[in-house]
Image (cartoon, rainbow, N blue to C red; front, top):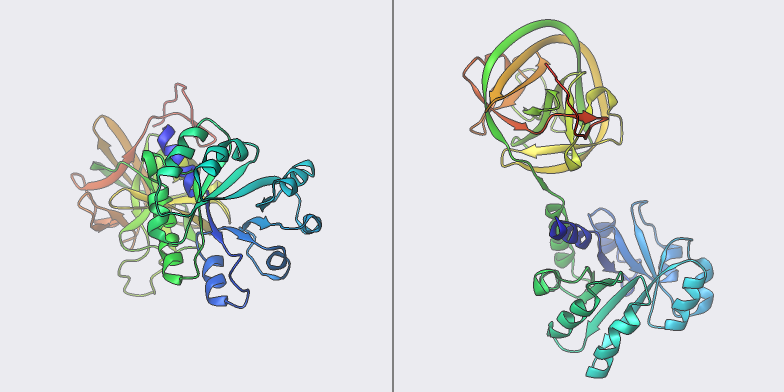
Length: 374
């Protein structure tokens, strides 16, 4: 768990150094602004004249005290000048010391200087990570966030793995689109959770009449290998496919999962679950594939309509899991072999993909409590 938190913190501390990138380089800034890279280091002029999405977190590089006047409250000030950083700290800013290390004396002093500030960026004159190892060892119990300056994606990966734990993050300084693209892809993969999917043997399929069902429309696009986990109880859910499979009379909806009856649980990041009726625009849900890899998607809309409903129940070991979906051929449920099955053709003995967990949830969060759900 400790190592998992370390890796997650590293993912949250990948910064792009944009100080040398002209605002006219829209190829680079457009890529950054539409990527998973949402932390940038910029100059006061770039901060004033640039256009950045709301998601962006800033470190502003300050060389003169007057520049502090234009920095928003709560942002991070980065500088080579410790006096400016001391002044910034007095004014309530978080601070980052930038250090270039070219000799042994500077290396021996670095942790004493770095521990005074919230962040420290280190850069070396030689392409060796031995100095980084020494700094990691010295700062491992300190609260200072250690960033290593790198110019390539390969260097970024190495810095995050030094001594098996790596620096706390990386400051990527490059004007090469290919390096930025690889870093963006790395951040997307790092955000994936893993869900342990198991085969479920269907024991009952029952037409239960009319009821309200919900479609979840997301702001992302899903593949034929993806869907969501939906269940009638907190003990687990069944893999309901995205609307990416053949429909004879209408266009596909790769942003949608026709999830099921409105009482159902839908699984969310961090092993939380939510009732379908509690979802709204901006909610986060898990999009999962047949390998158990799950990524976060944002909800754009929940569409609730009255439709005929179908109960599908089954067993995983000694646990009974069920889902109620729209009673229609075009609803697909993922089979245990990773192939989508039409809901109306499922019967007892059919094997589906499912997820099980300990029962007991309050407002979607696991709790230790005796709860019986049928």
